[in-house]
Image 1: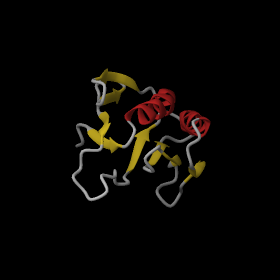
Image 2 (image 1 turned 135 degrees about the vertical axis):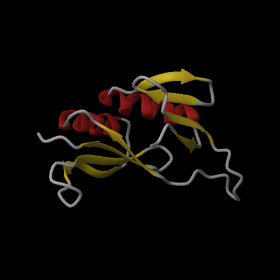
Image 3 (image 1 turned 90 degrees about the vertical axis):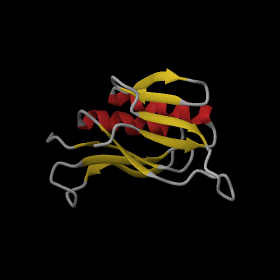
Image 4 (image 1 turned 30 degrees about the horizontal axis):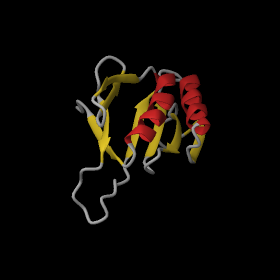
Length: 125
C-alpha cells in the first residue's frame, strides 16, 4: 500500500549518517543522493529524508514512528547494535512482543530528530 515515505529532518548529514548505519544490517542503503534529499532502499528508494520544509511556528520536524522489516532476529539485533553505536537513545532493546503476535521480534530507538525507529522481524526463530 505504501510506495514511499519521506521524513523531514533538521540535519540532513547527521540523519543520513544514522540511516546509512542502521539500515545496512537490514539490507538497506543509500540509492539516490540529491544533496539535501536522500533516498534509501533495498532495490528502489522507498524511504527518503530531506530538510524541514513544514511551515510551522518553530520549523521543527514532528515525531513519527516507522518500522523497517528485518529478515531475521539477528538482523534486528544488528540494527539495534548499529543504532546504539551511533549514540541513539534506546527505547526498547530487542525482544519478543507477544502482545502484537507470537513471533513479533522488535527493537526501538530514536533517530537524530527524535523519531521512534523500529526494526521488526515477524518470522519465528
